[in-house]
Image 1 (spheres, helix red, strand yellow):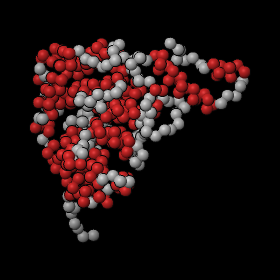
Image 2 (cartoon, helix red, strand yellow):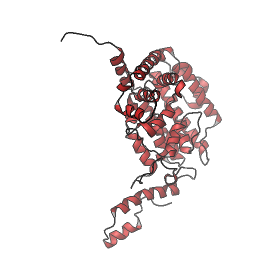
Image 3 (cartoon, helix red, strand yellow):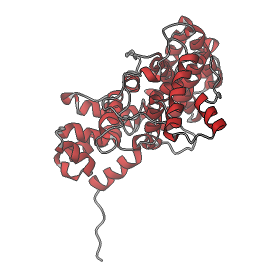
Image 4 (cartoon, one colour):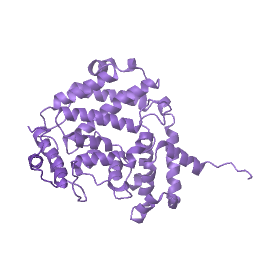
Length: 364
């Protein structure tokens, strides 16, 4: 295994002889050395940056970052990522400071996924890029907003947040040019749901890390909200997974690492996997369909329906970046859906008030 801190030979020669070397050559070598280290350090089942299936549009390589590192940075700096901080995770527009948002959920997924990827000697950069991008297409008000848009657009292809996340990085960001990410990252984003199968082990790590994150964080938030108590969780599940958020996270992450090590797949033991999905079912019964926690979701559906109808009949009032998509050949239905899906909770509410609620009139 090569020393990570070994100075390249031609740099040593330049120091000894005083040769004024080409700086571009030095920086280019830094990226190459990272790619070489991947081959000497990572598992044979990992995805290697220099063997990526590439981008839709060819572009020069970065001097110091691998392709997967560039993808991670592009996602982190894009507008859609920043909007996640004001999008619902479970509880609609929560007032408390400690409830998760879609952004904090994304960060928790990324951390879980990186821990697993590091333990299995997989590509952490690819794993992190997929994790940070997996929810970029989520609607305002979480899955309530997603269901509303899917119902509205079922005659025009429907709506799902994983497909919309890919559309964000391929079409909507950077004024219609997209982020031009590698195929491996886009595949992981598209296939992060249970029913899908990512092409890389890194994508499979994110798919499981997403569930681990939201199951445990949603329990924590539900307890904070007084919807459930820790004691309400079935004892047969806590005996396997643990009776606290920390213990459950520890159990699930360790189980994946133990059962996936040295394999060309990401696996869980049967008892732990059954317990995890049973815990998820418990959340559906106790939290996700709880009238106290979800009583406002009918209003979300009504609001999104009315916003959609308004902009379908007043397309010219959308921001110019969305009008440009229509001018380039996109359908009005698709672009109005894009506009609404991009909204944060607060923006959607304020826009609805501005459009639908009459303002008081007074003499000036």
